[in-house]
Image (cartoon, rainbow, N blue to C red; front, side, top):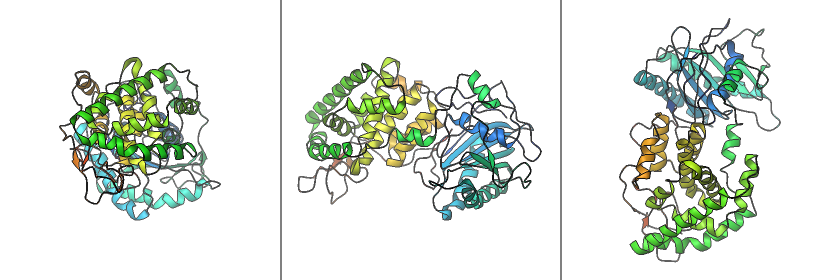
Length: 469
């Protein structure tokens, strides 16, 4: 099977594959991302995957990370099952959603494949979910079996068969298609040792590696734990009214805050760039958190809610500035504690943009999906998410930012806040408001119009943001 050229770990994916059928299954699988659907091109160089074991092993190399709590569908083309488009979505928590999600995922993958290249000849399905602490993989397999069957039925109803359906859990895989216990035992089959497979060899040749699990990558954006979170929340509570009042108070005050925000962000980027970094990601994140005060984080979190200020910050997207800027946006996302969780949509989107701009598409999709979980209607995140999923060239946006122009569609600068606002430090979705008992700010500097962008489709399920590759 040929591998789709969406990158693992931000580089180009392993050079792709022509997959032969095993004794009980058909072609093999292709790349994916987080929630929607996507289609990609096919590289000329090929590798061969044989059987479900190599399919299961190939999945993290195709994504750049080990997916967690995810369903992945991969389109196959031709008699040798070349990889085509793919769709990935968080597994819905409620079984009541499985049928509708199955239909939407099948339609999305098949329709987009037909639009971009050709209608698929088959599909490979992966369900990836680890058991709860202390649990085993087999109960997970049985619990998800009806979901796998609904997905197979949905694809078959569109005249595209599912050649193989695998469940990956607790370091093992199971086939929903093979009834032969000799090759697919009921207790599952251990995944091949890391670095020993044909896909691992191809990835090593291409200079690729698997970073870890999706959960580990997402954890880099999680809010700070207590007591640091409590201290940050107190600062946000204290400073929120004054900062929001400046944003909505008038042109002069707003411009002053914008200038202060950009100057402070510039200072922090220089500070992070000059710091000695700890090699492990977790160590680097902890070190970065210590370099940013709670007051500095509060100014940036509120100041960046202004669209024009955010667009200026997005210009730190390439060269030597990109890496410390990405670290800053990650750190700010971790400062969105307690009721300020939705403020993380901005730094998450900026982190996704820098990742995409520097070629790290898997990291970009994770960050943008997280941003859309925080605010499903955040326009900037939706536009970048769709552009990344469509495999567009980020240079178009970079050129706009270099020229001082916003990279998004025209947006109004302010947005009316709902009546009966509570407090600015704890704003409901899409509005920045002053604290209760104070004059109410009636506008929001966030991003302007909300709503779905053109081709973006959101499948129901656990995750709000849909991501295509």
